[in-house]
Image (tube, rainbow, N blue to C red):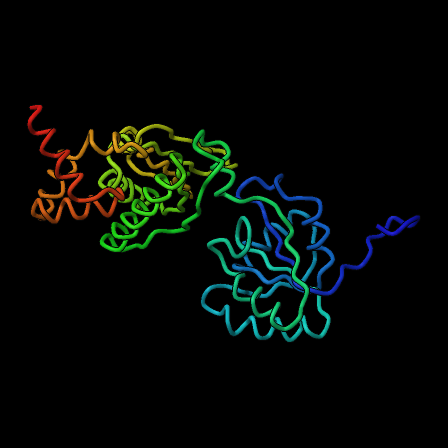
Length: 301
């Protein structure tokens, strides 16, 4: 604010990455409103969606579309204007730009052109879900959306399980929470894959419709959350899925379910040898160690 007259000082030229509400319009920040009013152009993932926000706060600034299908071409146009001294804001439909939404390509191009880039913090679904999850917040990783194809999704989860096991061993436990975004029509299949990879006792949290009227958190084992969803006719809304891989620094959590997990893989068509190989990749343990534990479990029966 300039002194005495109560008017806003002009924004410095450059690119502003403005976080917008993920549901509740009250989550917009005062600075975000100031920036959106002070720029010359707002690049939007969907101009119709953003216009609702602008109308609500009586902001009259020109908008232009900027989404995954025109990101690179539109970035060139925007960078030309920025290099000439323009003030441009980028927003996604909801949340923080460039986090599983367009924006990253433009940021890189702007920086390469010597343009100033400023973040304007605000709502983010992944972090909002994490802090209310009850899971590990000291260490976490964000994976965005998993692959849509079932085989690719399972492979990615297996890779993450192996990396989590390696981190768990290196850190002496508590490898951290893994955060995903997921579509409602795929969530049950994804949870089934999580159970196949980590076992039915792995702790998960499903956060749905964050900050909205029907906000919901489902907390428990993956088997419990799956059972809850099976009672519903349909799952709706935007979803954040958080997984806290079991601590396996002593191998005990894996040992309890080796026989069960190998049997499940054999049902899928793998022979026992290949099942043990896959389980070794997922857990970070050696195949020989898992085989010995499998024999011990069978001997106890």
